[in-house]
Image 1 (cartoon, helix red, strand yellow):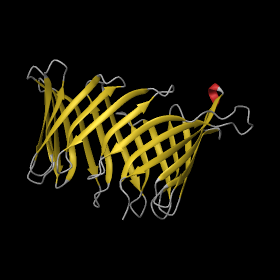
Image 2 (tube, helix red, strand yellow):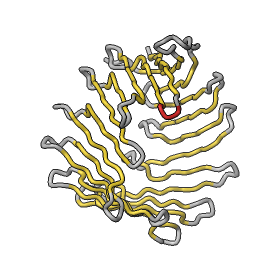
Image 3 (cartoon, helix red, strand yellow):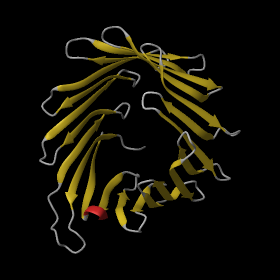
Image 4 (cartoon, one colour):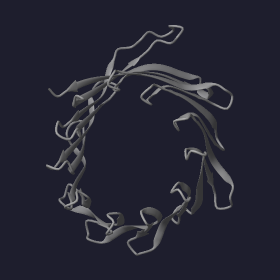
Length: 300
């Protein structure tokens, strides 16, 4: 039986360059995440600055069924930055979300589902009890084919349409943003085994804006990814261990210069133990090497 994680503490340490021009630095605390024993869900997350001081705290609470009923974001000194609470129906689906303000007022988001249990509507009512935004979702069977977003006056502000092939694979997403004045299509293609191998983004005039090409292995895992747009053409190579976790990753620019390298180590349970990261920004002549270490505590 797998041990239940109580806490994960993450540390970061500057590492010396390969030529030892810079000495290794002291290890510093980055984050500390605490989990509850019953559901294994995050109850508290702490983030620390470069000086080791606590900068931000996120807290989460759950009911007896494991549904999250409360979320709070605080500054390091405890001052509340954002506070939310949630209500569920008898099927543990979120039906209402409240965004609380310091003066006691709140925004309310109401979630509506169809008979198949699919989300069909989200309505946000502000603290003045006026409708601020409405999102609606439309399906064919269980497949989402269209979603819309309207403002408080009922004017359409965003729309997305989805198209699938006969096997249910997503072929295209058309996105229209009336406020930003953009109209784009993202088109996907797959190999004979149904593994995604390409993603193309076009504008309303069918000009190619971005493309992502993937080489996958016989398990459908991407081993090479080429990301290209008008500003860059980067190539990422990945290697996996026997449990399908990425253990090595390198990214190069269009000139073949290394941008970053990540090497990861896992324990026998598949938990990430450490990472060694190298970052290079050739255009600015900046490079850095650092290590990330995860420390685990478990419930008895």
